[in-house]
Amino acid sequence: MCRWMAYVGEKIPLEILLSLPNHSLIHQSLNARQLALPSYKYARQFRNHDFPTQGEGFGMAWIRRDGTVGRYRDTQPAWDSQNFPELAAQIESSCFLSHVRAAPGGSVAADNNHPFVHDGWMFQHNGGIGGFEALKRELTFDVAPALYPFIRGNTDSEVCFYLALTYGLASDPVKAMHRMRERVEQARMKYQVGQPFEGSFAASDGEVLVAMRTVSTQGLLQIYSDAQAPSLYWAEGPVHIRMDDGNSEELPAGSFTVVSEPPELHYAPRTWHQFPDQSIGIFQRGQRPLFYSFEMLSHS
Picture (tube, helix red, strand yellow):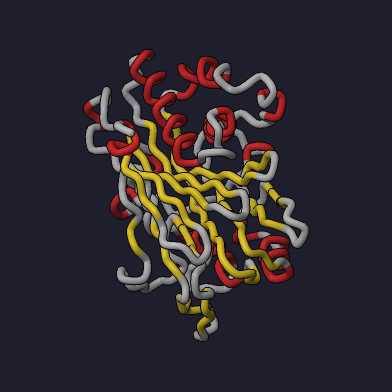
């Protein structure tokens, strides 16, 4: 489980979201407030089972001045990194994704850190495919042969990315993300995996930002019957964000920010809207966001 932020709009310094706010992504790497992990034993000591710490590394990916994708990833905790705030202060971009990773029981390696990038697309995920070890072979073999060699890590998140690319992320991102979700759920049912597939996702090519929020609703073991989709919020600029020093910075008009949890300790629900559950959203600068429920997509 992790925390992430994604932005598309006019060019801004990355630090306005990642390191300067009073609940920035760096703050969230040490003290997240909305990361409920009811099935994780070490989360039971925290109120509402909210597991606060994302210490297995961080990453950021951004659109450069020439339109290509830049990326930096590290296995060091974001809260203890000098590189994270320094890079966030020096880089300006019109679109970026950033992620801090919590991987209880998982492998700590740079190749497993988000965002993942390929052919101009950036991708990140909070959540997991329950029982992935039983589904990994079948899902990985669904990845297009031309894309398979580019899978470098061993996470379910990276497999989700390459499945979405296989299903046409570049041409129809909504359809591709929905098909990826359906393929995972199909595998869960086939192998009778009672753990849920849960996640909040973001993917972007610098022009379109697509996000998804999902949790399994079928075939769950009793212990997971009340599983909830990970928290997810979105805001449309102009938005004023309170900084750590007491001042505020403004996100530009027409911009969109999608986050695991808002970058402010005290935020207004009328500004930071809860992302609809079981749905996919499309965000483009200067346009109204569009949301598609899974039910709507299944009948289209």
